[in-house]
Length: 125
Image (cartoon, rainbow, N blue to C red):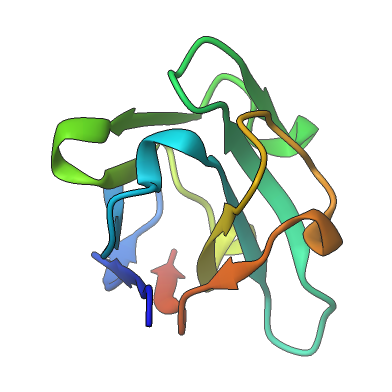
């Protein structure tokens, strides 16, 4: 069973930075587009960022552009989400997902085939 595991979520103060990690098992990570999504309390899951198989293409949700950066290290089977200038509106469970069979980015949750369990990010002001 190929797994996706997020880590790095924690309680942080507004204005600070946090980096989330997404590690996958198996040897197909470098062939997959990867996406980050989040689900704020009481709200629907929403797209945050996506990165193509080699990092050559990325996409961000408008509210995180200029604050968040997604990158990956295929040698470590790991993708990262660097989050700067966090605000309470960024508080959510953050999920990482992989696109089996596609190298490309996507902002559609249905395009992703493997999901992690999520990691909680809480931001206090």
